[in-house]
Image (cartoon, rainbow, N blue to C red; front, side, top):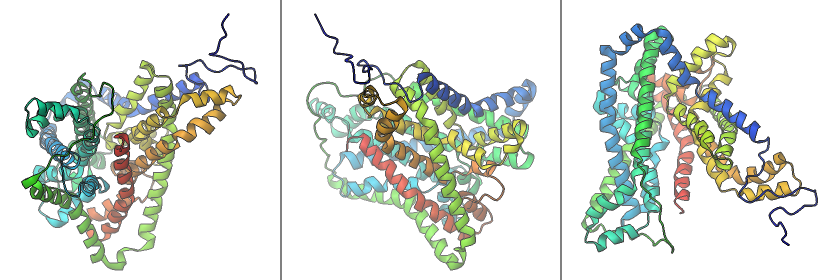
Length: 530
């Protein structure tokens, strides 16, 4: 005679959940699934807008507007920008990561932080600083310069995290087979960076497609700048909508290419025993050139923008710090940032819960819908909300709720990824135990799972806050009358060539972004086990 130990009776007359089964969600699986489906449908609104507007335009008109000389010029500019900028970001990002993580570089811990620091400076502030230094900047070369200096950390951070946790045994095996340091790097180490490089390249490419302010300031035409010009001149005109459809097509192609480029190779270590500590390569005669290279890179990407922001701030004197001008912008930026971060984090929970506790093709499909939408430029999301709100619910156009909803769609994956990681590290057995002791699902979720997930959720909310504080295009399109954020006020002042008046707003954006950038850097190290 045997006893069933898997489900012993409890004092409350209930039984514990069977091993391998997830605890009951706070509102039931069906309720969480319905919430996740509604969120996914809502996130597809911008994509549906583009499809609808293209179909409503008519085939003949759409073909005429898409296959014209102006679109060809924008396409050439965009392709050339990506073909030059993305490889440069890969070289700088991977090269900097290798020097910091794999060589005996003096001060490598300091350089590790400095190479991530340019992310604290919005690209349009970077452009403002470079135009201050070289007023004649314009065209493709200037766009490549500013974009490369602004976005190479998007490659550096994941590459450094991957290198820091890469098992050195593969390099030792390569050395035992007679491969030198450089041959081992290209034949063994570089292939291990494939996912980090493709992911970083995708992020850089999407930022290039979405960026407006940086390129408008140097008079370099891209799809985003052209769409904004069309919107300002004809308000939701057909030509602008067709440009948006081409831009969305570009984004979807990039997503497919990134998925295909990942390949199916395994990158995890297999076998018993602890991973050896990585051996740092001596630089010898290359120590000084490496230091000069990193010094020049950080000086151009971080030092120069910060210098000119401070220079204009000092040149403007105390008169530019008028409280009735910059204080409302700061408070509204904080208000929208906090509101958007809280709402986005709350919205991400149902999707993350399904993905971790009830993984299936259904949950993966819902999650993918959010990534597709977040890859779309802010101007496309803004145009979608403009059109839908005016045609279906005119009363909500240019309200704070619509603007926050746009922020949610744009930055939902930043919260989703963090919450998913936090839920994965929260043992479901603790939730099971709480429910077995008679706690209702909602109460056990709040007292157990939510508390354990809170640090990860806070990290995701911080990243969403950072993105909202620096967002420009969707805010310009959707903000209520009288709204003054740091980004929009900076853009208003700098567009009037009043660089001194724009400086305080740029400085405040940098001060707000710096702690969040450091948090992102620390998170990457935490993932790497450091």
